[in-house]
Length: 272
Image 1 (cartoon, helix red, strand yellow):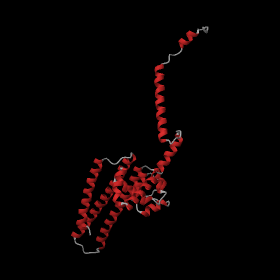
Image 2 (image 1 turned 180 degrees about the horizontal axis):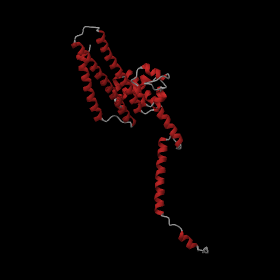
Image 3 (image 1 turned 180 degrees about the vertical axis):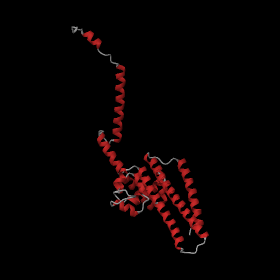
Image 4 (image 1 turned 120 degrees about the vertical axis):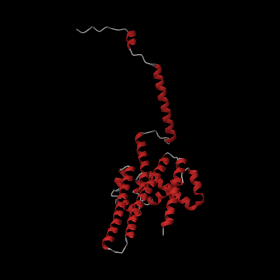
């Protein structure tokens, strides 16, 4: 049987209401006020007087990221102009801008390679730097709808920088393997056809040449990887508007000088 409803006084009803923590409410209100003031300050400083809208901000950010290579090319063009017209002030200008010579060189090379290839300019800057070492014929073909290492431009656009680098590395390895196999084939053909009256000493010399060719190809691949890693290092610091840490820069510069010296010695000993 239902219990009869008991009439309560106004004082009793008020006593039954949950007690509000007025201090907590005040603190929450103050926190929201601070966040709102900070957001408004950021909007005034960065928003050029416009009210913040997430969809507009995301759309603009996508545009900026998509066309960052275009701005990098423009920077490279300006650097080329400065170097050509006032070469004596080029390094002074770099110091004023706070950018390294290697970073400037990468931008200038990017401008030379991609200035007249608008389709390739839509790639992110890290990918653009990865394909920059390709020859002009390959880049022209890619611009006109052809392929690079079997990939069309839209495929390159969808992949990550690491995937692109790995794909190009595999292509280079396959090319070097093919060149080595061709060299080995030539050795076998020479032996079978008896094109010369080489002695065993000369045959051994040819074998050593094939081994040297393998080492040379491996060294070239390693140097190419080094160049790519250094580009990524520059891009990492540039993304945060910083120059490469001086200790890192000095250490890399010293090791590159040693490598150049070694290559110079090899060139002096065996070059034409």
